[in-house]
Amino acid sequence: MSVSALKMSRLLIMSGFYFMSSPGSGSAGGKPNLDVEKKVDSLLNQMSLDEKIGQMTQVNKLSIDKNPQHIKELYIGSILSGGGESPRPNTPQSWADMTRAYQQQATETRLGIPLIYGVDAVHGHGNVYGAVVFPHNIGLGASRDPELIAKIAKITSKEVAATGIHWNFSPAVSVARNLRWGRTYEGYSENTELVRALSKGYTSGLLSFTTEKGSRVLGTAKHFVGDGGTVWGSSHNSQFKIDQGDTPLSEQDLRTIHLPPYKDLIEEGIQSVMVSYSSWNQEFMHRHGYLIQDVLKGELGFDGLVVSDWLGVFWQDGENDAIKIENSINAGIDMVMAVDRYADFISILKNLVLTGRVPMSRIDDAVRRILRVKYRVGLFSDPYYTSGFTEEVGSAAHRKVAREAISKSAVLLKNNNAVPFSGKNRRLLVAGKGANNMGLQCGGWTINWQGGDGDITPGDTLLNAMQVSIPNGWTINHLAEGQKEIDGTDLYDYGVVVAAEDPYAEGFGDKLQPQLKDEDLALLAQVKARSKKTILIIYSGRPVEIKNADSLADAIIAAWLPGTEGLGLSDLLLGFKPFTGKLPYTWPKSFANYEGYPVSQDNTLFPFGHGIQTQ
Image 1 (cartoon, rainbow, N blue to C red):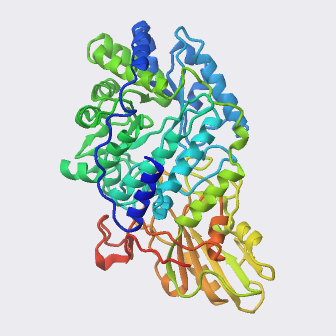
Image 2: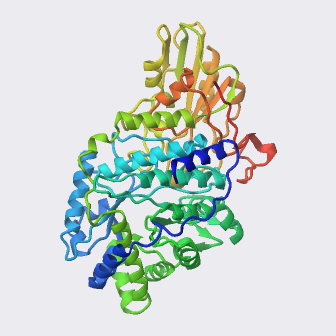
Image 3: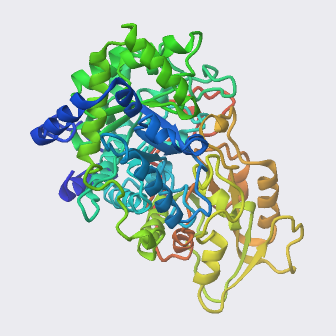
């Protein structure tokens, strides 16, 4: 997508319209590169069955570290770091050293095929201590700014490549239709057309980054397909309620609501698609040959690689491992995220091929796709990706873009002449656990899979940001966590309360009734009693039930999960930047009778697209 196209997309979605795009030039990467195809065929013809199956195998860092010799012995094609699977110390240079050591073993095999290393850099390179952490996608959905999202994707790709990593499992193009879902914040919006526009912007930025040697970072459209349409109580995972559940839709609705972003990103040049844990009308996506082979690879012309989710092949119900693997590979999955089950996967798949249950033609197709992608992203000519720019991870220039993203993501839901702050010599009171807590400010997928509490990575909390930004003559008092009494007796000009969801990721965030905590509401009432104007800021991965907060707060701000650069929020409060964000999801009044999208008019507190603009 060109810059001019990005500008047009932004104009359309900011004005409330976004139309179906016309068909592009074809399959991923455009016309096949004949030189690449010849190289792939030549290499494929030299490979043994063991080497082919090795290429189809992805192992996680913690497992391969127990037997690092398996990279060479089993011809492993890919390694990933799950959330929190970081080197020690967790620094950009340690990441670069770690990935280089793995790659050296892969390139010492008989054919020297480089491995491809993957990570979930879903809101910046969040596994890495000191990397810039951007707002989660729900916040970027509120920005409605594909140009900004393209910048974010390019920066993320640069920080990923700087640590020697070649593959980002992003963007999520989920059209989330139930706010109880713990992965709601990974989606840009409940609206298909907004998801299409913003995911195209992300992919454009991701593909615009190249290393000095011309290599790229592989992006991933996920989770194919319909993951955002699952219903409460349908999860196939006993720990969850809606994540990894069933999407009961007609094929027409599936194609209309959930499939369009994949078509768009294939036309943009995305080279990897990750399959969803969920099912469609009770048929697991990991074995859905019609959707993977016929629709994705056939109808949409996708010629990149299809990867499973974490142990997704093994987590299907009611079958032994051999049948699960047989069904998944024959359905069109090319690389299996086998994690710690990689030895089982390799052994079982080899036996399935030798006994004719998985045809060699399917193996060759999978390996051809994997090799094609490795050539296309430049791995064979530049297997290490590190060119001495690890110092740019978390740079001031990158943080400046994240600061802009936060200021454009926050949505002003209510304003009774409370923001932006004005006047001279004002007294501010700042309270709430989220006010000075980087872990709550960033949410899940930050340093650890489920996120964390407290000072988990460098950046500015909102309290820090306001302390360095307030005008001369202004004062700030912080009501620290655990402090029960507010200092003094005079009224503060402005009282700010930052309420926050506890961090979560995936199904551990499934919640029947997302809502403000009672202690946050009690604190809000306490601050209101001591403030002329009271402002409630909500850190959350979705709209939450606000109970009686509307009567207690003069202004309410949905800040989502903004990331490390709290200055983006202080810019809004102090009037350095205007509020421009618009709701990417409908905000319900109550979850008592909530049934997902569409939210009834009677139960709508703030409609999709709502957002008070300031000057």
